Image 1 (tube, rainbow, N blue to C red):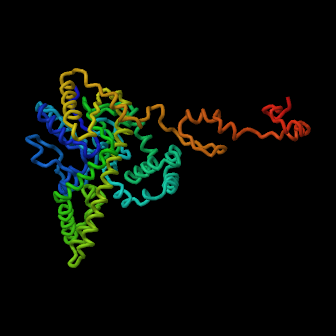
Image 2 (image 1 turned 180 degrees about the vertical axis):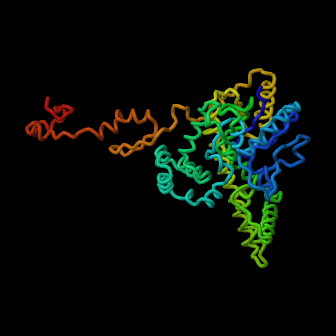
Image 3 (image 1 turned 90 degrees about the vertical axis):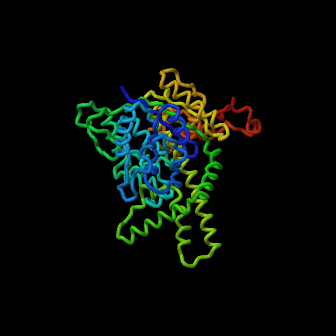
Length: 464
């Protein structure tokens, strides 16, 4: 029998951690962190670790447990540790509650056979990604050209103007070192192979491909998923206010302490990879110029204030961008995987847009859903809200297959249905129609009389 697990998903700033504590207190649960950066020591404000005072008596696992000088954790290692913790909780009669904003980690924990995807860089801000791989900041045309050189098969799947998908494919290649098309082909072979097949082996232990002794697809656990949905546009002001609060609570001083640690490591001859792990947390690189300016023996106060102001604005921008990345992952990855596994019925969508109504719209409904889940009763029906939240979520039949270009109309078509229908379109028929020189065929048809009376001419130019 599979262990029951409650998973809380949602973009940053929607109250996931607070909901996890409330549910754990009522249903005898313990919490497993599902945020890739909150696993590390340091930057508790920047990474939004729940303060000790707000955790109550609830144990939190995989939170602040990785030392700054330790090797960077990857998703496979997280899945192994979280799986063991869930087993231990269940044996003690506790309800495991997984909560965090790195949905790639959450999805890899729930579903067996997960393969490296563009989620490997989901927790990195756009600025960090582009600093690490400058090609990701290039124009869409340049990125597509690079992808065509690396992986022509994958490049042919995307519309030339679809910057997001082209960029994601390059991210996958840059983070894994393998062509995306090869990885997807590898995944199909693994997940379709029988248990005794030689293909049923761990391809990459750190990146979450399954081990030889576990089934290659399906769910590891019996889950209930709670998605706190909030409109990113309406949430932006709340995210900006939260950054202001973080600064008041000591975010700049926190970055200063981390920079001091880096200097100490440098003086001791130890190099620190700042392209991964805790060093990619939003707020660190954004506010670092302010900290460096403040460390100089002589500095202009006005310049210092302006540098700090710019760093805060960069932090706010990066936070909003990250929220959009999280929303896209939920819609385009997590929901699609739930649908493919016929598990959308286990998803309860909660409206976290209005903070003043959070208790009624989020906590109360979530508690009712968990109670129904544990007792085997029907879950609350949130189909209407789910449809609104998933308005950009394409069904399987609409998935993009391959980019095809009509030379006549100079247009790129993505789906088989679009390609089949295009020859019958008015634009294509008009462009492919052979022009007829009616004057050459009927040189005497248009006399001065019928030219002055065009109503006497038929549609093809012939006189009635």
